[in-house]
Length: 582
Ligand code: ARG
Image (cartoon, rainbow, N blue to C red):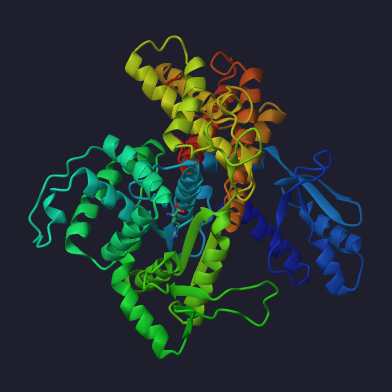
């Protein structure tokens, strides 16, 4: 159990012993640090229940608390806010617990099986800035859920059944008409895919341009896409080869982003469930015909806004995004029986998911208890406040975006690093930390502006600042090891900053819980900055290694170790790698 939860439990017992009915006391960081480090507001609801003044209750509680050695400066503010601080002994004991194992200070959530659908890369297309946020947030939420005890499955849910399939195949047909897969009587014989990833990156934009300019081409793309959806042997074989090639490139970028998936499935994998699912819906009398399309009504009485029916089969017989997402849920329930499925996708897709979720619930594809959660995120904008585009208005590729930040981190690299390859690797790692950290700082649904030089700054709330500071902690610890220290005795604190660091560390479980509840990493990002910044203040106030008081010195080293470990843990949750040097 975490330190803070332990104290809360104790406080609860104290108040219960006074005869009050209370389930759980909540200890909060004080809004008035001049009066105390933490505060308790429970006198207010208790006063209501007991028909007396909050002050009266607060007084009774404080009298009891004064008997406890761990507290000091217990006082009542306003109508009944109880402020309190902890004694030095409490802080030293807390540090001892943390230094044994920082994980012991983490409270687990009720164990759940969770599928996280994130990433969402599209086969044969480039990854763009929209995919960046999904990868960052999804990966971090996956790591957080695991840390808090969840059984988590990450699925990239590749976009592979859309029109790009038909476009690319049609273009391939034009370029390589003699490929065996295009023969009328193609019988599965193997062949070599004559293109590279580089070719592919040109083929899709070109095919898309042609289809947009020429209705006939577009029609052909539609036809081929429909045939792939129906598993046409030749086209499917070719598309699978293209998919493999594309996945290699997609994986490289995810690897840079420190993002990995348990499942590499896609929309096409859901097609096997579609007939069964549609039969099920038909049996339940949930399907209607509307202008040639097959739809399902999902309106609810309490609706205040327009809720269009969900289309499952288009009038031309094709399945669409809605169909594959519903069938994917169908398959996931069948294979994994998850308690929750989370979707980390651009907020602009919210209506789509609301439709799909409603259909899944109404048709009982998922049980009432299964939680389907849309975790939308805002856009990353350019300086003009509009979604980030290339200069000519095109989609900005993710690798280009990273290269823009990389230019900035490169400039700030330690000149002592002279090996070219090392320079490149470290600079890229820092650039990604810069992009990721900037991405986590605002609340998940908030839009933010892409500012490479600000993100890459070594000062302020940035990834590089955190990395730099963390590396410095490590090198301090290494030096102490060389001086012969193997473990650090904890016995003495010196000033307010020492205490403040432990005070911050104690609040971590609350931060993790909040991030988990809101599915937003901003509180963890802020926490990391606050902890690091306070540590840096401590670092400049004390000459740790040359301190003559051994008791202080080893306590300080232990504090350094705990902050270092905490930073590593949290940076890892955020999917940020720490280089050896920078
Ligand atoms: N491929 C989609 C896109 O690029 C995102 C997929 C999101 N996940 C899902 N189950 N629909 O917009």
